[in-house]
Length: 208
Image (cartoon, rainbow, N blue to C red; front, side, top):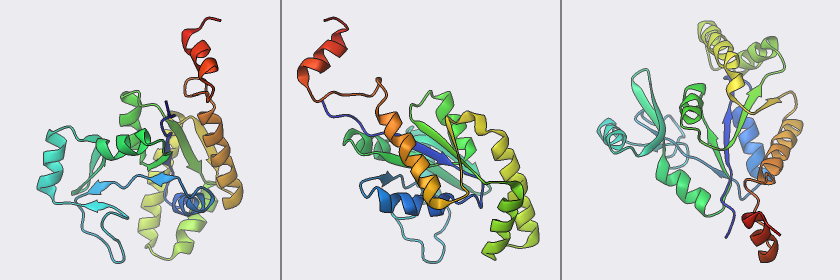
């Protein structure tokens, strides 16, 4: 029986470099899949439906909640965001590893469900560096940067929810660390599927 894919749950405070790391991971692991969330918010400029998000009407989203179609979902301000169960299950059953980029609230939901996966939190080298990166983007006002820093502190305070911490000082080194985590997780005995039928039978039976 083929080994199921590994769910890789990644979170980070805004400015820690999660998007950049995701792009670098795609280049290093072309077969790695990335979950595309559903949302009720309108697409921003240059965002594509089915690529950045599945953009759906509020009524449809609420209907999916009623039918328990989301692994996790949240209402953020006036919009809803959620991860569809079927999309995740279909990908993993095909043996494809899958990255779920979630906020801390989503991870709390998965932990309460005892959802198995590799939980990775991306940290900045320092709060000063985080502020520098946010300022360097040039896309937000001083007040917005202050709000993101405060939100980042709250997220970091809950980083014990995760199995691994990756300090994103250097992108290549951080990607190496994530790849090492993925490799180790796939070698856990609880996930291991030997190619040799005789060895598999011995392991599964627990007797020689």
